[in-house]
Length: 166
Image (cartoon, rainbow, N blue to C red; front, side, top):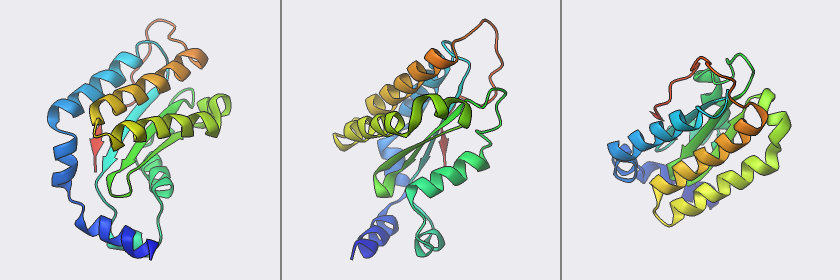
């Protein structure tokens, strides 16, 4: 029964709903939050939103976590000089936020802290506060990155700051 509920959520989900909850101004603010955060650290943060999975992905039983790992690879978030890329992935139909971090930062922060940040973002989203949830999550990730990879003057922006809508 859970599989059927999930399938129906994805069928009824639409990019229109995603854009209603994440209008252009919110997406711009997310990009600014990423850029501002990256002034304090040498890490790279990517923010990705996806309304729903394809039927094929649903039939295969793809979880939000598995899809986040796929997107991490597709966007080459792992391809940073210090292995400190972090992906924030939202699968709106499942109402799930996942963080995938490259090994350079993950070994310091760990699963428990990443999950806590995800749950905080999801808490804001459940209240309908998509802007605040996104910006708060980015700020918390930036705090972790700044602790372990503080900015040391000029550094290259290896990943775009603007959020990606799939």
